[in-house]
Image (tube, rainbow, N blue to C red; front, side, top):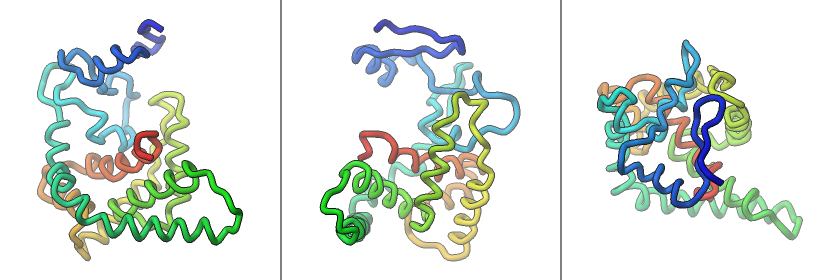
Length: 212
């Protein structure tokens, strides 16, 4: 299928070579910047996550991608595997125990184990209580089902919850990924929406097939 441009001005690519050309973007010819498509007024916090912005703007200016990536890159390079190994093991055992306790004798590996495990790991990374797992799934569905940028709900309830997480972490710091984000926000390296975008942006990773 050849590339085509839809009625909203968005280009769609399908072949492996075309997809890789867009993803690698060696010519700086493509952009994920959704700003021309956004309605006026506040936009959803996920659109400030580092994966939705480029190292350059559509006007040719320096973008925020590299600065946002630098906030977490050292943590993932030096801390993630070492610090999360025991956590992932604990979450995996707990989830398997839950599945066994159902006594059904079979399971859907992707839906019941892989997806839920990745969700719980992300929750632990970002300080979200595991009791919020189902609520968070519903919010992700609400977000992903929007037909256009203009249809994305603001999800102010999610923003309020994330600010509660930040307030708790300011009062009782730990040594986790959320603390890295909060420290960067406190030091002025990222702004309010970029902080919320980081917390929210990590969560949809679990809905990507490669994540599971």
